Length: 628
Image (cartoon, rainbow, N blue to C red; front, side, top):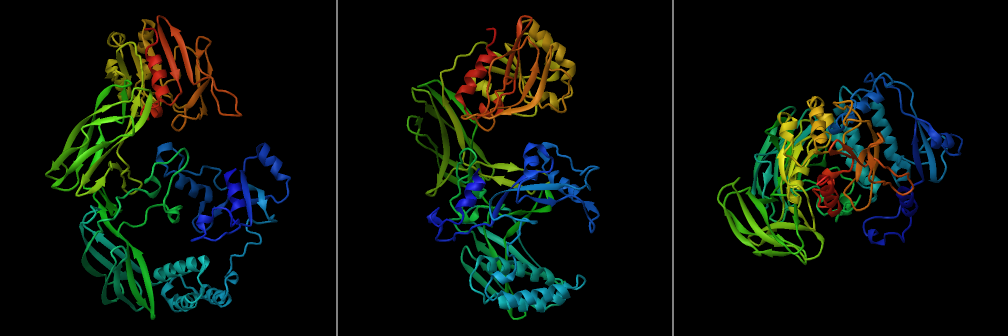
């Protein structure tokens, strides 16, 4: 268990000595395993153990008039892709006891934090601060928060002279936020464009407003990344916004925006982050940080901020400044299959973010892969202009997989970013700019049959992968689902979760089964066990379960929603399972039906094929070739 290993190593100065330049060993007092509220063998055994702590997490919030379960359900309902319930349900206000089993450290008696000192007494010189804080809390008037500012400033003055300590630093930041809230001080910086290229000029308007009558002076604006400070004292009056217009240069060395945990390619279950201080942050630090400097009661109050722009698609949301390359790239296909030793054309598309972008474009290939030409010049006159370049790529003579990259060089600076936009109503706009890559596979692949019909489901790239294999793929609509129109096809493949998302398919099942009886080959990819549009997906018994399996060498899960019951006419081709678990046999089922074949497969082809997994291509080619 990784958490227990981390607990045991946290206080060991011999572990991870490279971190001691910025961190100090720190030993937590105890570690628990939350075994949940619903009983079971683990919870039952835990209930009689020593040091077990039970925490009541149910009930209602009397101030909000809402159950805690309902509040949690609304939060969970923001996970839009999984269809979570947004209502706590009729049980929302019931008691719910969570059981915590001790795994290590000092035992607790009644509370998870027994014996953990969270007071100011743990800090030298903190006793007086504790007294002043208690007085400020006792005198706080929610109808006049500004009345607490003098007391808070007195506390801040004492905190500022304490020795350096992580707890003190954290409390200083909290105290500054409390003072800012009590004053009613708000700041923002509006930038006309939400995207900027390194080295460009940023035209910004800084605005500050105070909602109370506490005297506040806006003394300066600092730009730490330049570095530069603009000093001018402006007096703030209650409810009267004050603005400063400025023009600054985004440093040419500013990195292109990309979530810090995605900047480097990860490995299974792990992200690689160069700067450990970023780990745990929900998003990147500002691309162009701004410090607003104020004087309040003779003390300097600094508020951190960043430029933002209105999102044209959602005026209620502000968009952070993103740093973009002058040119973005994308391969026209995410995967490319090669016969060993053969050459194939590979095409990359360039899109200009700014006018008059010029340089060279090149493909980056590992040893054993040959690219001709080495580079090609480009010139894009207008922003938004697109152009495609084709390279000849020769695969190694042996079986191999590789990631090919694409990059441009402009004025000696290399950029290799593609552009992925995420737009949803419930979250701010997100821009991802990963490296432009293509999965290249040198594979000796034999196929039989040429014409495949693909019936889309919830959305996947399997049809494109079939074309890479050499099949002529026809995208099928409901109008195509008749025995006469299906007859010329060597196989019909149904996309993932088609029977969960398309209500029109149930009425066309007889035509699909008739196509199989006449000698066709029907391959049904996985469907969710919940919300099926038809009670039967096959002409004989097949029950889909929630069983899943994970295996080394495939991307994410190897399969999901394997059937757990099926008619005897099906043959289970594979048995597979994780170590220590019983094997699952429903991942690939094949049955003869008339002159043709029926295939139900819970294997995750929609993940494996776009990632260029060789074994997945071989196996899927065999399925499409059944009966040929």
